[in-house]
Length: 537
Image (tube, rainbow, N blue to C red; front, side, top):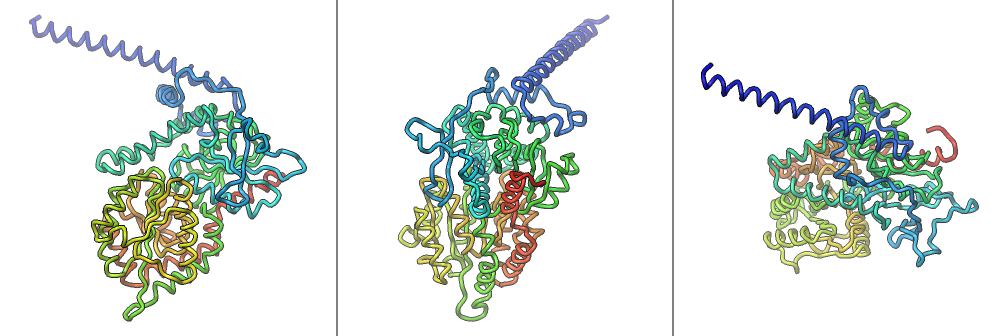
């Protein structure tokens, strides 16, 4: 045998040994991960049965992935607490009649949640502020609960608002998500594609990881009676409530893309669209755990649809071919994660000539993001609008006064109005308030894609949002996703140069309202109350 043949044989032998060692390591690691996963399920044992829900035989757990990501999420040695975080509540300073939960303390003994059987029972709308979407949907549900649930006291239960180790656990996850969203949106290219695919990968294992995390959040619910109606606008809230033994949990499923990550075992999952309903059934979600409800929309927007759409139709019809043309009002909000800065700035820059010629008015909602406020100010200066040439609104009262003025038939003082706040709630509420007096809502296809206002669907953040834009386009109340600036300008020209597109969208909204398309939150609250009274769903 030649020297080459000997070296080749030795190399093959070494490679075989390495592969054997790697295989043994994989088998041992998987075995340890499997035992770890089973230990997490049994300690403590909860009513949350994710394995049965996602059909283990067809999609067996990837134990290594679950064990690794769960350890990153909560820590390798963290055990679920058996304690209870004491809850208190106080009147909302922003929403009359609504109570907001917080951690009870010696300084707030009078704020303890009233569980006296002689007083109205509690109805919990639970959420987590991860961006604006989940909070926006929660406030929408509360707006209906305050009207529909006269015999209940509505509590806004934001898990991040309850000072605790559990809230800190959620906060760290939220910070990472927001950071990655901004990076993906602003860099684009391969990074955006990777992030987009990640948003589509909410498989059964993702739900298992979420369920294991939710077990650690149980202390945030244990201070409440187990038969309390829970309307959850974040899957972690529904998972936690089910794990804690609550028997009347309704999960408002976000987006329009069916994936295991957003549905929850042991509760009633409500979806916004029939296509999503069909896809969840196809995946294997059982009919008793699933129901079509409609879009998650605030009550004020829904009940005023006929009036608002008629006013928009009359407005866009005015002045074509003669004097009296009324500028198109474009509302451009920024999401809670503060992503899309680059795209939105370019859109405002492109709208500069339309503003200069009186064809467009801009309502720019920078939210509570200082970097977006600065970006808007910079691009407005670039298109010739210094700070003395546009108005800035900084308070929620100022937003309400602005809206009432427009509802009364008046025009804004300036062609551009910038809305910027120090707190998140005005940022969320402003988009809801101004949707009634806007001709077009220009937004990414997030929770706002379901709103009953004509929509220009701009570039998404995460591929899961693409399906929400399709829902709007199929209903006829919004455009297809305009991923490039040129596509946005095509739709803008259609809105500015003729009444046909916006008239059609408003007519479709009126039609959808008659069919109950936008009644999702109303239906969710009514279902929660029926279940609380012993009626079937």
